[in-house]
Length: 218
Ligand SMILES: Nc1nc2c(ncn2[C@@H]2O[C@H](COP(=O)(O)OP(=O)(O)O)[C@@H](O)[C@H]2O)c(=O)[nH]1
Ligand SMILES: [Mg+2]
Image 1: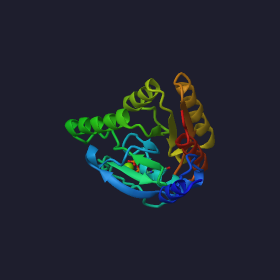
Image 2 (image 1 turned 60 degrees about the vertical axis):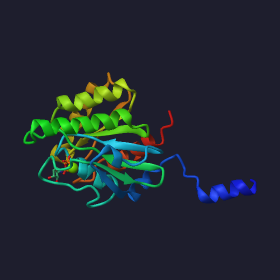
Image 3 (image 1 turned 30 degrees about the horizontal axis):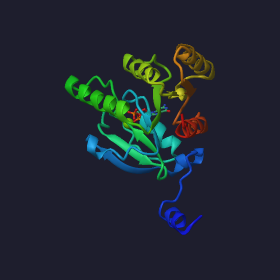
Image 4 (image 1 turned 180 degrees about the vertical axis):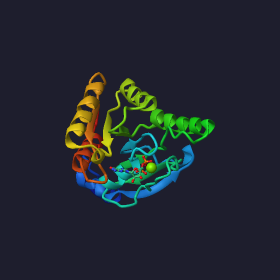
């Protein structure tokens, strides 16, 4: 290494492009972007959480990052209207997208959110995968399927968290997982797992999966 390279290395420390599951515990809130111009720079790698309001998205982010209130959880759905960026290190990020499908939100506002999410999904080069929490007791909604199909159409992996599985007994839980896996079998790059933020089910599995998706290079 010559002197120039040495200086360069010191100025720009090389970050690993393999994400370890434990890195998810290092998540820090970075910003909440109302506008496209406020998005973080599109470099490195990120995974985004999308989903219907009230499915347990914020609770899932908190559980996966081992933080009580990194992403605000709420009993009033539909409050998160911005795209929220969390950094894991200088290379890896988590992104919390606005929730959709809350009936009490006026249609115009709902459409506005959809546009923001669509724009983010279409433009973002560093996006490696979508994490989609779906209530394990309910069928995925039309909006959930729209996202899943969209991911398939652009070869973006989608990982489904079957949330609130503490509400089901063991047998029904496994039935819900099998049903989800069956309906996703025709979708390339779609995976599903059981998850409960309340009873800490599937948290290590989700961390492992997200770390692998963040490390994707293809
Ligand atoms: N029983 C149960 N309730 C949950 C779980 N995760 C979230 N909730 C509850 O569901 C509601 C919505 O959760 P939140 O994380 O804010 O959902 P979001 O709107 O998708 O971000 C809150 O009342 C949470 O306490 C879970 O794993 N089990
Ligand atoms: Mg939320």
